[in-house]
Image (cartoon, rainbow, N blue to C red):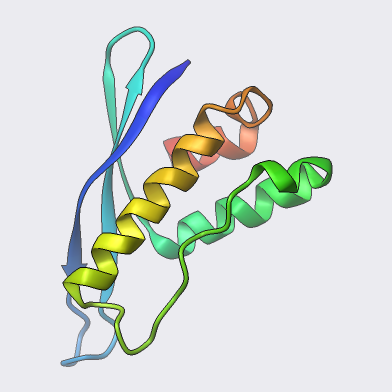
Length: 114
């Protein structure tokens, strides 16, 4: 049902105190086969949860799931690190969305629609 996934950009959301509680949200677009784009906004932790839940649901298919891009406490808000992470998340999401085994799963639908 999905043709392609892109991660268009990201936004660094400030925390309550300088340097504390800040996080990044990823603005994603899912191009559907019927032509309509679907916009979603996700944090890295939500991608981690998706991968974990898919691995639990499909233990035989973990080899079909690429790893998520690595974390970094030091570089986490640096543009170059975020650009690499964006490419890694895009690759991960395309592999999941375009895999027939995962594409129709309730786990993926919950990720997309929650």
